[in-house]
Image (cartoon, one colour):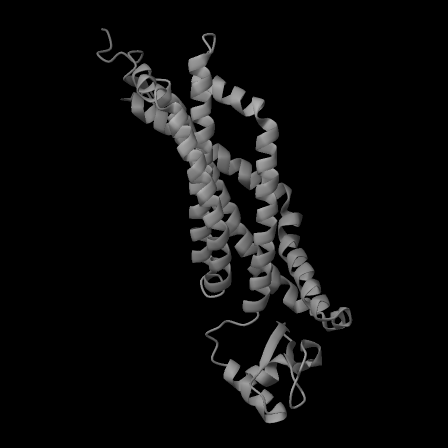
Length: 312
């Protein structure tokens, strides 16, 4: 007796248990298997590099504390706190992790949309529609990209100074959103230029190959764009670190700061001070110990035990 369901018809397949299942479930199983393989690789990497993973927060925390103390004065490194290392490291690592995740998401989105656009432009009817307006579209996108980059410089600086201290995670998401828009437009310009090459070359195999050819032929220009982008990125990383250093010493909403203000006022009769750095043992406060400070160098560093000024 023949089986009423043909397992080779492309719609059904026979599982190991002998049960016939829809072909869609096989692809779903492959997808799950792919995800499991990816997770297994990630877990294997973590296990193989467990020592590095465990030491990373401590390393970052130690570097950060050395940087902060030496920024005040190199001699203040003697107030280095071993117990503060993992705390600072975990805080820095959490921000780095957020940047990493957003970077991966941006990369996945740009790669996915770029492939979809190249496939779309490969369709004859779509290709015919855009052929007549390619040059104009490319020029408009270039102008839009330049304007967007100029605006982003100001927007990034504004967000870092005003928004990052109180809402760092929201700020990172906002900056990532603007960055994504810029990269998408830049990718669109490259793809459209590849389409133009594809139209002008009778021997071109595909739009994707033409896009790669466009990248290769303009690699020097792209290299300069990457270098400039990295330079701008370094500037913004410096601004982020500066903002992080100035605003993440103590939470803005911490009520106990009033205790410290009372201690400082009782000793120096001033409310004008800056917290340079704080660890679990000491708070480094910059203030004017005389009636008037005509210069920033007139200010002195006063060190308080953390427990005394915050919790008494």
